[in-house]
Image 1 (tube, helix red, strand yellow):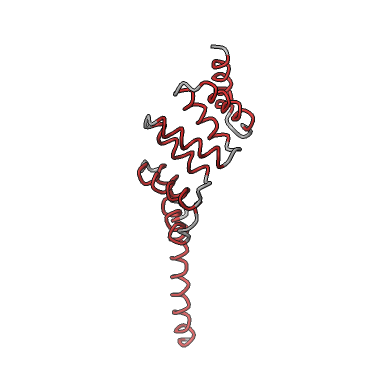
Image 2 (cartoon, rainbow, N blue to C red):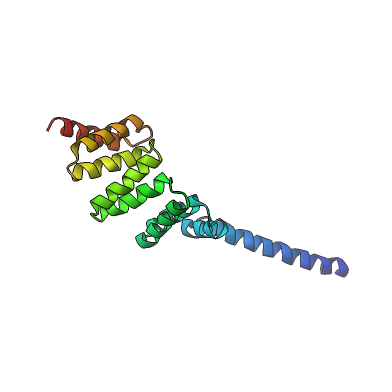
Length: 166
């Protein structure tokens, strides 16, 4: 019986180590910042992991790191529309309307079906006094707006109506 117990201890120890590693790994999946940091370390050449790490940084309020990750994403994949859209949002919120417009143009050029980017480009265009461009992109948004919130659809319709009938 003692011999069997002696053999059992290393197996038990090994199982406990594996259990601990599994618990730690599963805990990291509950923290998006850790999850996507690990993903970037494992796949640094994939735009999607940098984009998602940028989103995780934004969620914790680290906008500078978020911007750096979104820029990495578009360097890896110059057609990564969602990253351009996020960069445009940062510029828009910072009052950098010209830069925001450029990013949103890149977003809709890279992915013409990106409804959110059309909406954002329409907002910026309206703010810059570019009425025709704003109308065009509100229309594009409404035509592609499936899955968008009722509120954003209603706002786009109201803004479009106001632009057409001042």
